[in-house]
Image 1 (cartoon, rainbow, N blue to C red):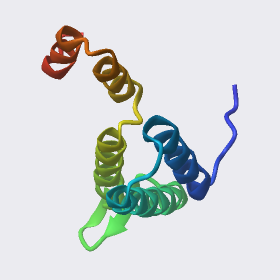
Image 2: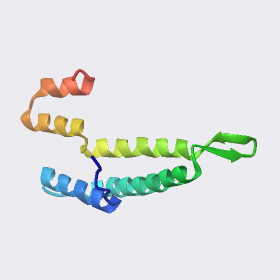
Image 3: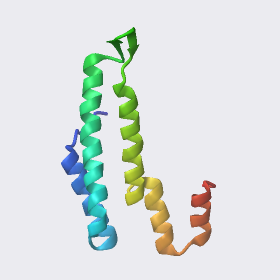
Image 4: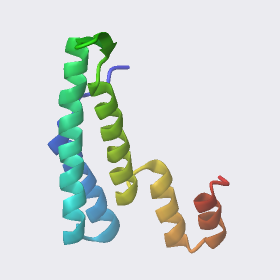
Length: 116
């Protein structure tokens, strides 16, 4: 199944809509996280395209070596996941927020401890 390719701006807008539905508004302090997320997503997309273009191995000063952009891509991926989790838009984070709404402290504690 082929997925539709969305622009980063579309994705950020969908997250903002989610936050607005969940909390009634997108707080000012969340704007920086949304902006950083968009920057990281845009940069990761560019780097991944460059990796596809150049390949996994590149010629360096000492000969053939692993493309250094791979490490950058992985760091960006970690940053992106961190911001997404911070905003509570992963399925797990959303489930924890739902638990908070339901006042189910046992389930919240289990989720925090990783005992799902």
